[in-house]
Figure (cartoon, rainbow, N blue to C red):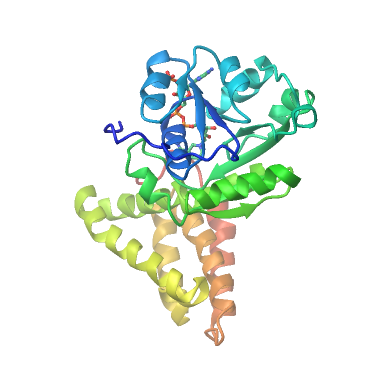
Length: 322
Ligand SMILES: NC(=O)c1ccc[n+]([C@@H]2O[C@H](COP(=O)([O-])OP(=O)(O)OC[C@H]3O[C@@H](n4cnc5c(N)ncnc54)[C@H](OP(=O)(O)O)[C@@H]3O)[C@@H](O)[C@H]2O)c1
């Protein structure tokens, strides 16, 4: 929960679009306060629970806590729909926009912040002459005030056309984030793939913890050992790029080590060898992108494919060591 900071947005500029939020949760807290701090007028906030809206609006100068989503649509030029994904479509459906961009001369838009949901969910607004867009921060919001600092340097993926794209790009930059464009219809693949840098990185750690548990390692000890190694790997990727940051047997061309590890994991049963094999396939692809790839990559690849043809058949849930 946020500690109460001094009110944000006391110096907002009237020429900028008025921003409103429907849904005062983790993401909205960071965005609303961040935009206000950057000088944008954040004028209206509603939420399912009135206290949530009041708490957030109370931290922003000249911002009203509204009783209904419709009041936000009436009081803002750009409305951020920051409700859970399952409520985006139904909430968008209830909103009535009086005065389109064409009739008022002001840009009017409805924007959601979900990575996986299509912008088409906002079609009811589009049909009323209002622009629709997606604004997805690649950041895991905690709901704490620290988010406002930590989001700096992150990317925000924008799906919008023309004038709205320009405005959303400026808003991303106001948070010190990098705008990233996504073509219409690409959100589901984009969001699914992004799991590899977030939840699936955690799943990789969980796989190591599970395997180490067979050696008697406690989870706390394992994480204390693994997290600094992961942090170092991320830093090396930043410094050198993915192919040159790759470490481990594939990077050295150690076919024998890969073969022995695959055999050991096949013996353990479950899907351990299959997971290791599929990840090693990716490691081989990365190693091939090096200026001087190891000469044994084809042999490693053969070992992986042989193991995968066995392991993918035997992989079944419930028989792993987890
Ligand atoms: N959290 C993240 O890390 C993250 C990252 C990127 C994108 N997003 C996206 O951001 C959006 C919001 O996610 P979040 O994590 O901020 O969710 P959250 O913390 O659960 O907050 C959602 C807020 O919306 C309010 N709400 C729920 N249903 C509502 C309704 N029908 N009408 C009005 N308000 C309603 C909630 O209720 P109360 O009023 O009861 O508090 C809460 O304040 C989602 O589309 C999500 O995919 C989230």
